[in-house]
Length: 105
Image (cartoon, rainbow, N blue to C red):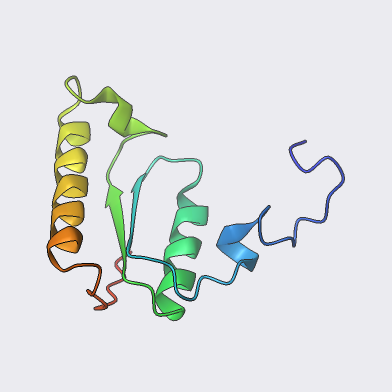
């Protein structure tokens, strides 16, 4: 598979589980409730929050993997991209100084 025999505990291969997330910039994780990687996204958000990262886990109900690619077709995709734009505007305005960690999920 993708590991090709490599140790899955290597941080670069399994960042949601093994990477040191301390000092990462603000993070928005958007995922659908039907996403195959929902558990990984939830785990990454929890670990980032525990490491003091300003993180938002944004779970959209009943949408699949990479649902944002359906912008212009799927209302949920348009709304998710609007939330992503808001996240960026807020962080840029704050100059990256926003450290209020928020974890939902």
